[in-house]
Image (tube, rainbow, N blue to C red):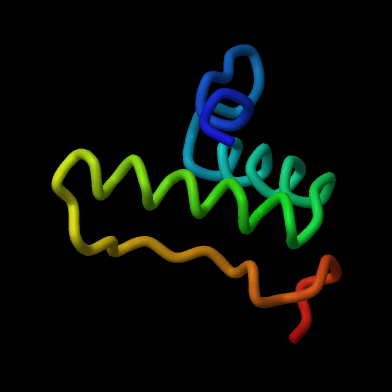
Length: 67
């Protein structure tokens, strides 16, 4: 996700532009791929000594933005 949604140029590099890129990326993957990405993220965080995370995104909604 980071390589596809954080390194941007030419289109909105503000919060909303990056948010749009993230949601565009997430619309192309399924729950299993998202689980694998987040599992790897938490492994890397633990290796770096982090034991808690404070971040949220509205991924509990369906693609139309509804519960």
